[in-house]
Length: 409
Image (cartoon, rainbow, N blue to C red; front, top):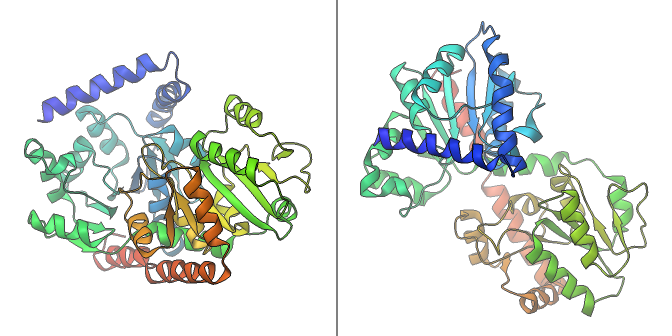
């Protein structure tokens, strides 16, 4: 099985090389690793770091509260690695990490060279991001391994009969901290004893963002205390629903902030062409507060913009999966999503509680907004969301306490 896995990694790397001829993301994946290789070779490490690996930005948001607790309470060095450019590029200057790199492909020799170079004292992974050769090498060298905010489902490949050797990798973790009871019970069913239910560390992260969010004067002035619908990480499906809505509702009692998932120049031009009412662009010299629509054509602001929202329509639910709904929930505003959300336990729970709304088309979106216009309904939903956020905080502290009590720091 390990041989097949290694062949798969080689094939994947070759595919990225081929894709780099026309894909900027694939090109960055290759060039970023190539540029860092020589830099890493020149490094001299005099203190074994705690190594966090995150596949992309979402996993980083789960690791971040733990990283900051460690840096604020210890003298430990932090090594942070990413698989994807979408994780590395926005965080390459993150102040709490001492070294930030792309992780070389998960090949046996890469893993041996990496561990020999950095010799981490602790390896921390997130969610279900399992790297066979890096895990094997750390375990062989008696380097503790931790998995945080873990979430598994019975239909995942790990629990297929052909993947027993990969599932065995979970035995090599000192501890697995799960997001939910379902993951805990699934792992116990397979007789894993190194598991503990702590919850999702992202909730600690979004709560801190909500608590610490500074005012954004340009957004505040644009909203002008009017009810504002925020389209967060939107794709064309959510944006088309807004276009249809504006055709029927052109009064100025609502404001709309569009924060597209893709803010490339070409995609923004396509979006601008769809909107047939006056709008403002974040990157322009001035924002007209009389406009109803603001397009935010940059990254890094969305989690702070939610503080001005009345309702958030989160993108991705008409494609493979929704984007982060916890960020608007931390601001206690109702959330609307598309139908593909079943892989996110917080979404499943909040849909069942009636605090997150699923829409399949424009008509359902319109009906949901009309429902939320009832002040009593809106207040009840806000209270439900606030209760969920409050009662699910604390995972980061539990994990940090475990690390302290087991002399891993």
